[in-house]
Length: 312
Image (cartoon, rainbow, N blue to C red; front, side, top):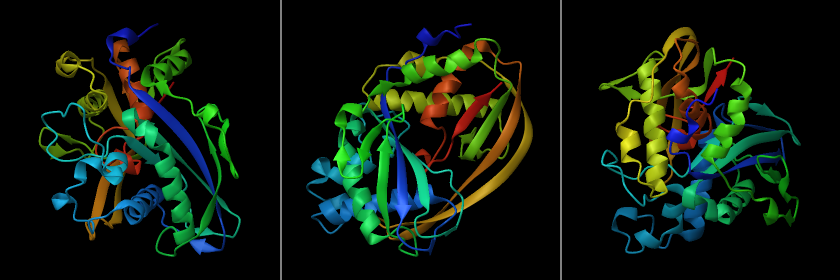
């Protein structure tokens, strides 16, 4: 079983980092921590780098701004359907939903950097260090960075030591090839939506796991990341990658509030999560959906939305 992996544009670079934070005191934290971490990193970057009073629209240094380059990624080749800046260069994901913590407790999360965003590793580290001093969430919970590891669980940062030789750059194709070994003896039978999925399909926000919407969202995400890398993949975006049927098992809705420091406004992100059984699965889809595991799909992926996982 090969699933025609070579037909997909999977030559998109990435680095996936595994962070462990150690809390310095008893505290309360929000259930959805990816949003708090992402917002906190952005705020620390603004504090350290903004020289025009956060007036991004009128800033004469906009194109050189380190905050724009790290948090609001610029496309080398902008897709025609993208009308404004999108945070496509990274995904922050935290599966810890606890809210009560004691001194010394640890929180783990992942940061996946794509394309040119990979070179800004030090900016993210410095911002996270500053966030640890300033405090995370409404309770201003202070923390230290205990460790940063690569996809092979090798230390990149261990205390005061930095091992850049362990900063391993891979491609989405590398990830897909590795995952396909798990399906050599059978096709996936279930897809799990671990974090909220927010997708608009045919003009409507989906409220159930529509298979066509899931496939199109994955195709769109892979196309966007290729545009970010300046790869010419127009034929792929116009192609029909395959089909499947989904029979919804469990499904729930999520409404996640967040506050934007940059815009000084409140907003609510909504989505659905749960699982569905896969029927009549087209083998040609396997590489694409496995790529979706790494990329996340739909809207608000930088906040950890759209995590999917295929299971046998």
